[in-house]
Length: 324
Image (cartoon, rainbow, N blue to C red; front, side):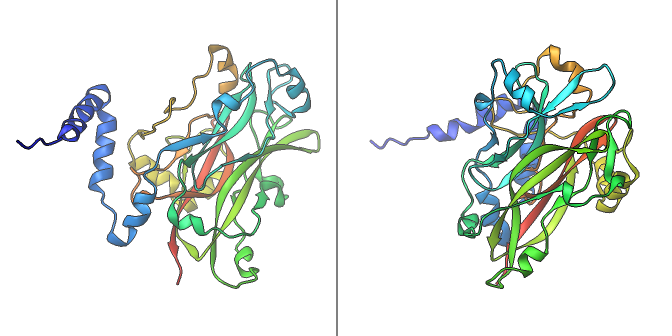
């Protein structure tokens, strides 16, 4: 008598059926990611990006107890004369494994009144990134361009501003390489910091770039967490969105469904008491995953912005290809 182990054959279908009953949109997104098959030459990259996705910093590592000493040392953003102030965490967030596949703003601390930045990354590093350069990563920030036209007020001009300069890698890094071989630069860390300007505080973004030798960026696109560009956005921000094609593309796309294996797929829950600060910060995550064909996007840039009176994130995603 021959016994066959067919348990795996009966495991997948009930799970898919349960997934459909709980959330039909999730199954529809899974179907789209399966039907949009990558090309043969892209298959190895697509498979490399099918690992679980994690967020840094880990929520359990964030301080939850009294943190008055931290707040005293942290800079703060004021939005009005007598209103609440938002502290800013200047901690450097560096992912343990490349690549970065998403970003979000989050309200941290016991009172959820400290603004921090979080990075999504893969649980396992793809094989093509194992050939990382020994060169030290380089920080690049929005403060490198001192142009007041990029300083956008969150509420009133006499109070907190946001620097909306896009943070991207410097093309001169590749030309200055000692080996002379082509290389791509991807984000491996991020940091928020506040800089005084005249009588106001300006919120800036810094990104840490790691070099990947033998690769080049072949395609890029910008994404953010709002349905459309409207409300309190600057002229430069609207021009930037129009040039990148983000406005027309988002009007054509339906509501996005996030497929995430994390405990909090849509982001950590925020207490009711923190709602007063949520009107100043857009905390939705900006990610691209397997459901975004061809499925192996990684972060190569980002920028802060003000939309509808909220501090928000735009993220630049790119595809890499080997250069012979």
